Length: 146
Image (cartoon, rainbow, N blue to C red; front, side):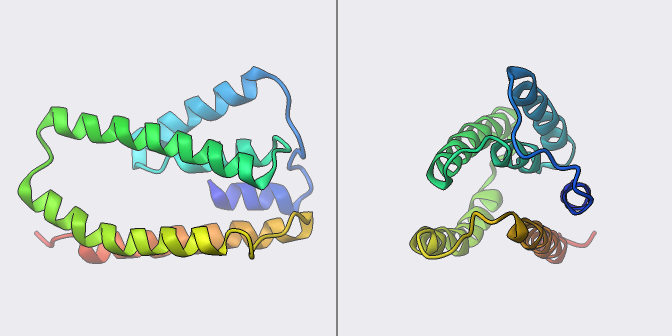
């Protein structure tokens, strides 16, 4: 999805601003489908937020709210299905420690890093692609061989 967004941006077809509720509804539905299929609901919502003309703080607040609600619903579903075992909780703590450190570093760097120039959007997309590739590689490495 991020590669498609990058190609659309590079070709000049990426809309700078969208209006109307149908865009938000479409981003939400697509996010739900992708989240249910592969567990990565963020890209449609991030792209939608990027096209709203909001300030960086407004985007950050909206995305945080989305992900808290989204992940809370997923966690409740896992609990309901009985998937939260002792092993899952121990792995969660092991993965949470670096995630909290990264979140703290991101919060500290939020004011210092960033640019509103359109020229940097391509670099932002490439950063997102690199992040997701490294995340998938980490998951693949941690996956138990059977």
